[in-house]
Image (cartoon, rainbow, N blue to C red):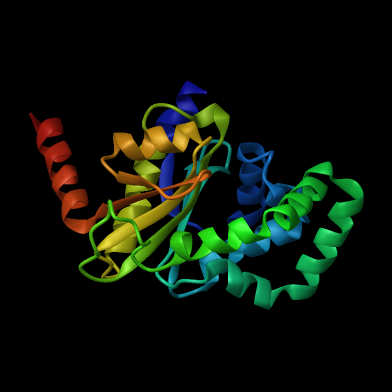
Length: 233
């Protein structure tokens, strides 16, 4: 495994990577409702990041075994999940209906949403609105980009792989003209929270379940310059 870690490389995601990406998704998010749905639906989610001109995706590849072992995606166009639903409504409905008969997790998720519908609707504007409505967060100076899921297979964690993948995608998003990259992280996702803190991202608690994390362009490149100088000393 040490040799594979040394050989890891980061590149753009392609359609040929979707099987590996879906497998990494399911291994990293086993308790996710999305992981309980149809495998093809999971691949549709990441296919959109490859095909949309406003969305971006990077993978961490082990070329020795010829497998993708990590990925990160993001977009500069709001409504990513809504667009996915509109493109695949029948698949979503069928996969969810099938899941109700086969997955206790989906039953629990549907029941929870029915019982908490008022609370979910009240929190939704705060979570998804531009600028995020947080008193701890000054308005962005320009366009915001959204950093979406990042996942690295358990066998390849450590050694800075997740940090490099995060920085690579962040730089791609900022290169589009965005002045801030934002993300949403669940409170119980301790690994991701530690990752973003380590990379200098700021955070704000917006609900009982979610944190918003963000980094501005000037802060990102300032940290990157400091890292380069430190490595060259």
